[in-house]
Image (tube, rainbow, N blue to C red):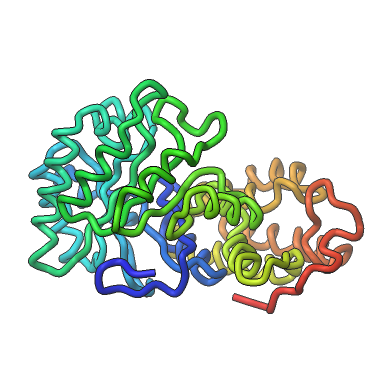
Length: 350
């Protein structure tokens, strides 16, 4: 899989998710087999670049390349300047956000709202490509199928973006109107893939190895982007990779491996956010890990009252120690004692 001059190790990508895909999470997903990760969206508003929130989103210290930064906004000149700003700070690939369905983003006509104004969308693409070209930085684009069911214009925008110099395109198989409701559709992604020469990435509802194979078959896409399914389950990337390569499922991860991964993730998270913010923002990650585990809901309720990093970290360690005493491998929701029987065991990593 190639993006400009960069050869990726595989075609399984981590989706940029606001409030989730920070550097510790990206690195964790990569350690579990993701071949590529894009940052949370960084605003094009210059007055916000030096805020703590933006500086954390733009933190790539120690992150393996290629460093991909997603930018968002509504003004072509501002987005071009934002691209240059992030390139100066280490970005090797710039991704344009035309996919975010959040109301606070779309109300400002950014994110997927740009799909309602095709001339504006194209002017943004052209400006960003022009800003990145002197630096040899590829530009990619993430979008939805359209604004609503009656206006699915992904194909028109995709063709124009390719003509303007975009080097990879990701399509989430929902309209902005859907948000994350209902089921993703893949016919539009297949049509985009058939019409373009650049790589096309399929996104939306890829939540299992079997679904990953089905989406690739339905769309002909060059790669898959996984978002919500990786929350609390970063090992989904190695599960998908193994299944696509062999047709065989992996056994669930060892409880002690999950314990080690989560505790390491928490340490990186605290280091980035500091104790006060880190403890609070880590709660959602911990909740995602334990939500389907025995005693997980009760533990999450107790954990949400913990105020210090040391106590939170120790509580998580103790929870997984107790789980490991009863289960060698991570229990699967709704699965019996034979879950994973006949599956291939995963190596101990990361």
